[in-house]
Image 1 (tube, rainbow, N blue to C red):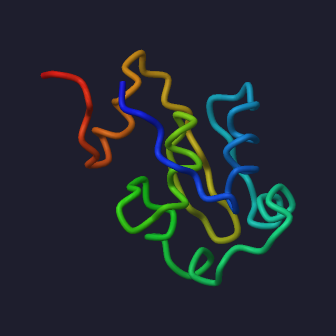
Image 2: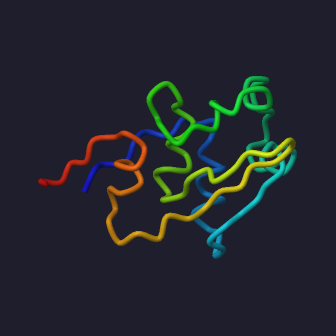
Length: 105
C-alpha cells in the first residue's frame, strides 16, 4: 500500500471531517469548509477549478481528501462535491490521478 501523503496542517480539519462522514457523496459550501478549517481559503480556491484537482502534484491540499479516499467530483460556484472512493484497492485513488502505485503490477 502506498504511504499517505503529508497533509498540510491547514487542511487537516477538512481531512478529519471527510473521514468522519458516513455519506458517500458530500457537498460543502466554501463557507462551511472555511468554518471547518477555521480559516479562509486562498482566493485561487474560489477562482480556479484547478485548485480542486485530484492530483497532489502542485496541489498539496489534495492530500487532505485523497488520503481519506475521497475525490472532488465537481466544483460549482460556491460549493464543492466530494465523492468517496469505495474501491477495495487502497492505491486506486492515486493511480486514477496520475500517482504511482507502490504495489507490483
